[in-house]
Amino acid sequence: MEFVELKQLVESNAKSIEALANESSQSLQRFEQRFTVLGNEISDLKDTVFTLAQIASDHEKRLTQLVGYSITGESDRLDLLQRLQKLERRINQLEEGDRT
Image 1 (cartoon, rainbow, N blue to C red):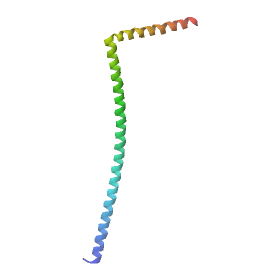
Image 2 (image 1 turned 90 degrees about the horizontal axis):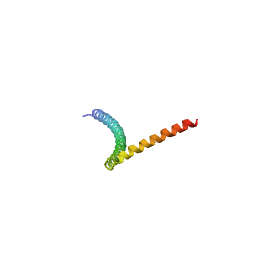
Image 3 (image 1 turned 120 degrees about the horizontal axis):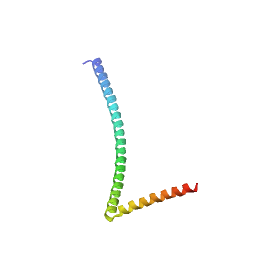
Image 4 (image 1 turned 135 degrees about the horizontal axis):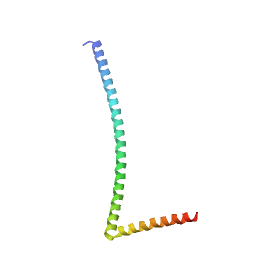
């Protein structure tokens, strides 16, 4: 091989290496962007799961209270208490109407 042919071969290889380096760099950038997006989505999902766990815990406490009220007859008492409160509100409205 002559010098000119070797020089052309080296230049051709250099261009190929540069093109591969650019492609690798672009691929790495796309990967980093996707990784960042996935990281954000995972963080959002963690927050959502935590919130749902809190809601589930609150519901479980309420159900436990309701079952407890039902077993002890408190549910009847609460119903009567609500009726009394409603009656008191109605009486207060009537009294206010008489004052005007």
